[in-house]
Image (cartoon, rainbow, N blue to C red; front, side, top):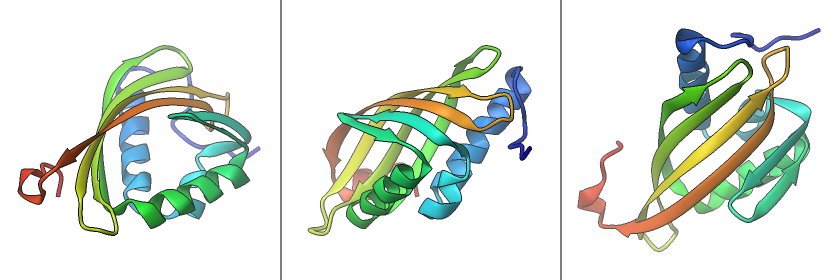
Amino acid sequence: MEQKKPLPPFNFETASQKVQMAEDAWNTKDPSKVSLAYTIDTEWRNRDLFINGREEVKEFLTMKWEKELDYKLKKELWAHTDNRIAVRFEYEWRDKNGQWYRSYGNENWEFDENGFMKKRFASINDLKINENDRRIK
């Protein structure tokens, strides 16, 4: 059976590692690569969208990064238990008209025994910003 280390149960060090791995992967903006961190039957709630399965994750991320140009993300470990991690994040991006945004949010993650994320629940808010107000570069 394939594994995505580190595996649960998580401690501070391994939860922090999982968060950093997620940040690094999402910053590649490669939907195929990012989707490999999730179970085949992963369940997501992203804002008002409900996404089921790795293939839908790829489709969602492809559309996301076609819209959210120059995307750059920063994640922070908030809390963890045996197989769950909560993160706080913010990312910045611009639309096709050049308007910059900072998107803030929280995610709750649940992992299977092989270290793949089987559930992801994200709450996200967007704030228009000026380009010179960017903090993540």
